[in-house]
Amino acid sequence: MTIPRILRALTLVTVVAAGVLYTVHPARSSDHQDTYNLAHRANTSADITDVFVFPAPGNPNDVVFVMNVSPLIPAGMGTSSFFDPSLMWQFKIAHGATQPEDQVIQLGVSGTGASQQITLYGPARPNEVGTTNTFVPATGSFAYNTPATLSNGIKVFAGPRADPFYIDLFALFSFIGDRNFATHNSQTDPGPETGGPLFNGDSVGPPGAFAPGYDKSANPAHPTFNGFAAGTMSGATSPLGNYACSTNPPTNTLTDLGGGFNVLAFVVEVPRSMLTTGYGSSTIHVWATANSSTGS
Amino acid sequence: MTRSFLGLVALGGALGLGLAACNGGGTTSPPINTGTKIPSYVQIELLARPAVKEVFENFTDHATTNAVEPYAGSPADPLQAEIASTENALRPPNAALGTNYGNALASILYPNEYAVDLSNMTDKASYLGVETGGATGGKFGGRDLADDVVGISLGALFGGTLPALGVQPEDHEENGCIATENLAQNASQAKSTTFPYLASPH
Image (tube, rainbow over all chains, first blue to last red; front, side, top):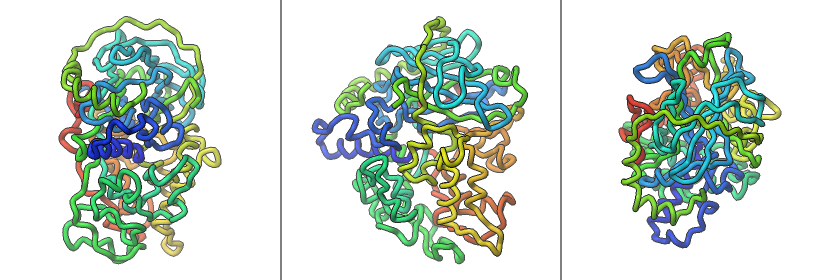
């Protein structure tokens, strides 16, 4: 999960709570993401929040690839969030060695709104490796928010789901404030980086409105997460000293605010044989990318 | 789509329940889309290991790392060097003990890719499972929807994970206050046993 993206949702909650919803400029004032370019895209589906790879539950012959995008869709708004047709999303796979990719699973989208069609390309050897890519031959297309099985047995889904990630973001920001997007004015603004690793970010931007008071101490000498039993200490030989850990309750930022948050999920369940036949290793390395036809 | 607060709230409130009911649709076999997309697409976002960029890398470097291969290395990609420098700033190396947790983590977490062992399909998926020989929960590796990736990461950064695995000598520099976040996945986020496996939207 890209942590600064949570700020956009916190902004939403802030706005709703303040009752000034209709005065807020769309998109740019709310899309607080991890880079300047991503933050200024009108559609947030270029933002990959998490990637998962696991054996299909109950079927050890299939491998499931999940790529979550469009972070922090507020509760009740999942089915009114859609994909950007100008993008290509990819699972890149390298067999044996860690580089370069020798197989890709790609997804593209056509149309707008709830009638969007998603097309799966591959799994196939890539047309080219590296950071500029083209689509390999299409495998099949399917509808937004509707599970489907393609003719070759691949199961696919693209649509809103609950975000499975969990973190006490306020506690993290309480001592690594640099990761709070609101502490930067642009992608090149170093913000609190100049203050060192321990710098509080919960007093800046939307977290300032929602972080509990115990997570707002500026430049904390004694960083701590929450939820420790009374008397728990950092450790007698800790480089930061021996001090008491916080007994305050932790917060699951993805579920404890505003009824919880959603993402748009790409889910592709692939027969294992499609990942191994013709390749020399059953150990693979996997990463995900979002690519833009405009380059930005 | 331009995300508009107004549009989102209006649609979410008025249509959320009705549209959510469409999620339960059965599987179908759609026609093949034979259309060919000619353009080249340039990488603007990259992600594999969770929380690595966010914890270790300065904000100003995220755009650079997003646009390179996950194996590019220095100087094209600042991530690997920043893993080492950030960790060593919070957990200094000890020459007498022979510890350098920053370099150790940089060698484990970079390239920024998941390792997946497809010969272990009946074992559990678990973040860093291949790199640790299954110590994080299973030898399949990859990442499960329920994995406590923040907990795993904090244990490696600030806790006793690396000495416990024999990756580094014990440095006695653990910080119990930031080695765990004492948080569990909410039931509303829990993995389903049926495709597409992620929980229904909130």
